[in-house]
Length: 269
Length: 196
Image (cartoon, rainbow over all chains, first blue to last red; front, side, top):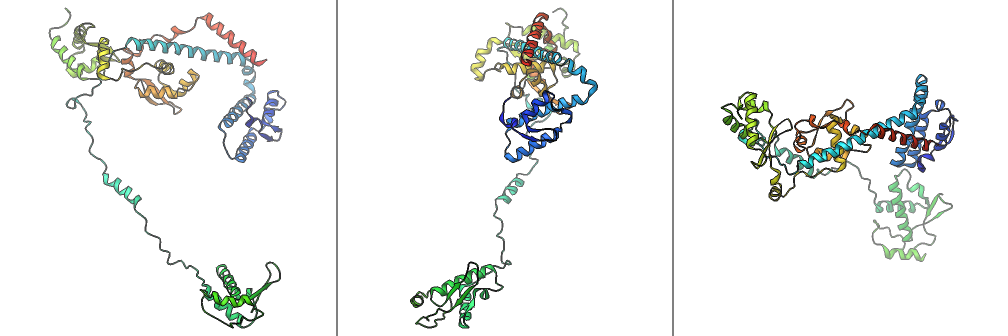
């Protein structure tokens, strides 16, 4: 009885604090009054323990159930004061008697089993007719009963499962589309008016737009059309035209595609 | 022979035919109802058939088993039958199956938990095999909902029993009072050894 699982279960009860096996010992030595012990608390503690461990070890669980059942029986006997004396006085004697009765029972039927074995051996080689009655002599007709169910039903049932469901129409869902070209045009418009903050460019816009606007800004930077500064992390981003103008001058082209030749000028600046 | 009525041979032929056709033991009442003859003449016909099919006279013997009468093969034909059918006759029982069968036979109707309690170990697999072999049948449920079992007609046939009453009194295998006293002594000693 030295399984680690249950024995180590820590309890914090009204009348006792410590591991479960110590509680058992104290109860058996009558140092803890079983009548004052709330066994439901022990069970709850065990359930908490189980939950914390996240897995159910059957062996431990069985041991716990056996132990808690024994405690419950002990406690219920203690509570029935009238019967207490008689019961406990004859306990070892009665237990031995019961065990003896069981052993005798088992012995009796083991011997009976041997006798049956002899009977079976004595009948060795005896076979019986095992043929069914000819159909004409039967009182009931056991010919295959006509199909009570239409096989078509089964076919339809599996057919429904196998067919592909219609594609779900998503046309009513508005998918936000933000084009880099649009955002480029917007930033260039702002740039033409002078410096501006990134915040101004995306005021009131959704996250997608903010992200695409940032891409557009990077594109402008790459092309040398814009420059920016940020004083501190998460601070304002000030966007302005590059201090030295690109030699090619304003090259406002709609769209963000191509344009690698234009950016060379920007890099020079 | 002298007590056999005149019409017995004709009735005996009919009874013989019915026994040949049926694979289950037929009771005198069933034979009487089918032949529309009285139970007395049917019994006389069975006596006549028993003589005709006495061991050594015929390859088929008439046996009173499982609550009725049935034809069975002469064990002398077993070797040849085995070669013909390839499958051996019902094989022997394992100790666990025999014990379980004995408990069901003597204490029926009985539930599986009760069988396990007497044997001291689980009887699930033995019960399943016995059910499979048709030696026991399910016979409803106990008041606590457990399936209860009883032995089948096939059991009686296989073990050569007319009725369950033919099983010897189980008390004959009880240990003598001296043996019981010794067993009790040993138990108490073991208990004391554990307590100290």
